[in-house]
Amino acid sequence: MSAELSPIVSEFETEEQAARYDRWFRAKVQASLDDPRPSIPHDQVMAEMRALIESKRNKRNAD
Image 1 (cartoon, rainbow, N blue to C red):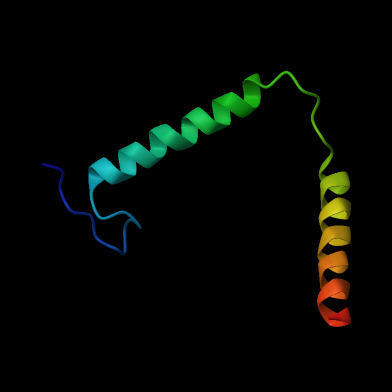
Image 2 (image 1 turned 30 degrees about the horizontal axis):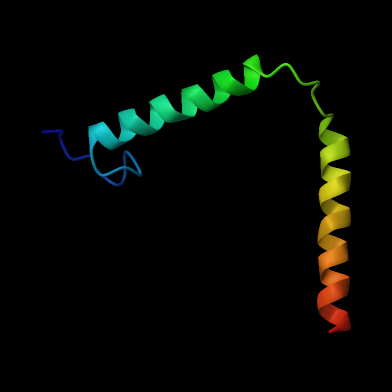
């Protein structure tokens, strides 16, 4: 059984939950690093997201 963790120390209730999340997170990062597709520059992604948010905002205001 895994020891309980203090909420001050960790957002997880047990060491096993923390370890499971760590394994999952590391696998996601490694998959991203291994992805052969070209990277997208941060500024491009942010511009696309700003345009998407503005589009949704305008649609909501038009309704």
